[in-house]
Length: 291
Ligand SMILES: Nc1ncnc2c1ncn2[C@@H]1O[C@H](COP(=O)(O)OP(=O)(O)O)[C@@H](O)[C@H]1O
Ligand SMILES: [Mg+2]
Image (tube, rainbow, N blue to C red; front, side):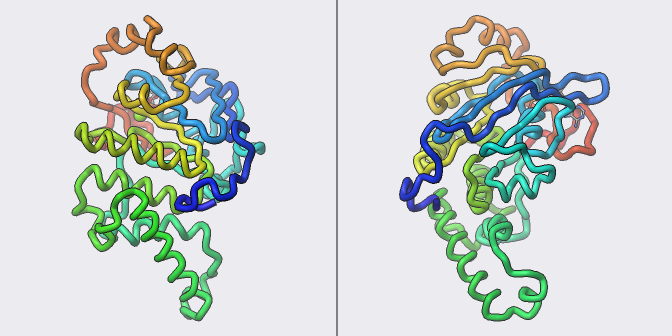
């Protein structure tokens, strides 16, 4: 199914589980970052993941997307265990964005989205070097699709801008376009509105609804409670690596433990002290975590 031809041919029955995480646990040395967390995401759902800084949200995401192999527990995607390599996970139909933006700064917006597309093209190295007819055909299709996706996220006029020169909110949308270029069934967004102004945040909500309406499932981490409760069908709140509550926005919003978890930790700024830059990075406090 393509993003622009919404609901033309729903590949799966509505409501079928897309992602099933059970008993996911992640340890970093002595630190239990994620402890026995379950989550099921069904087709067409928007699921929110909230919790104070350091609660384990990004780590849980990294387990869901195959960037980390959980210390224990299982993740199933589209009915089968998660493939062992992140690239295979993308090919299976899962895409994500990062808390700290990861674009190719010196490439144009269009090129950034084209890169996302290459996991779906078939030209091998030889064809690419020789730039034969098959390569040129695929290249043209990739370019056209990338432009379509830029239009979809509202960046249709920014095609030739270098990523590094784009406003912050546009860079976040560009990352989403690149993730969509992989033709995912499920997209996971790590703090997609971090650093955005209220107008950009509203646009981000609209875009996420549009993505869902095109047939995808969405998992979104966010600090902004109003954003999450307005957007999501279901919300999971993590605190110190554990699932505190999972329910509808109404249920989670009115749970005194959730309020306490936020207020009790002085969660009044957007400061995020953890980098999610990679598996090797084991420094707890890293400036790069600030997107
Ligand atoms: N690569 C890592 N190595 C060691 N500790 C980590 C690593 N990533 C995260 N942590 C720790 O795991 C906990 C959860 O972090 P994180 O998942 O980034 O939280 P959140 O996204 O909810 O703010 C924190 O205590 C953090 O210090
Ligand atoms: Mg995080």
